Length: 263
Image (tube, rainbow, N blue to C red):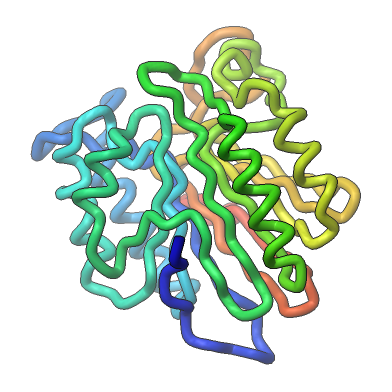
């Protein structure tokens, strides 16, 4: 399977990425999700990132791009299509993977699972289960990840998926996390070139460093989930996104940006 074209080389500089996740764009013009104009909040995040973090080498859209309606892809596409920065997409549980791949099939969009960028390899895993909120990685997906990490062992690796592989402490949310996450973590542990694991889905921020691997969750570009709750509850935090700098020596520098200016 061929990998998409590489962003422009910057041998002495980091690979610069932006992550936008869980935009939940409605299919209808003026459509709202939980009372929020989710296309407008995504647009605000994208414009904020362009003002404060451009230029970047690639953009990651890590699932739940739309709210169960393929028309949403046509509504969000113009936010990114006017630029030349590659936009790498993977589905979440509210996406329609086949329709997403078809409607976002032209540059700058790409749905390929492997992105080669100089000293880095990005592996994008589809963790969705048709008709379900939780995530799974099929044995074929785990074998593909294992093989890809071995094939590009001379590069640093960032693995990206939608569903969270680590519990959040919110029982309702952890009911729809990645099933059998130990299988994924076991594969990662076999490869010392893995530098980071990045996801969405949880509508909240998380950053931890374990055994030299950065574990990162990114808030939604629209509404957030209140942390540590037994049942569903929305947070008052604003929309957010994440920037990442991936350095040639394997270091990852990253931060969540909240649109209230606190990050």
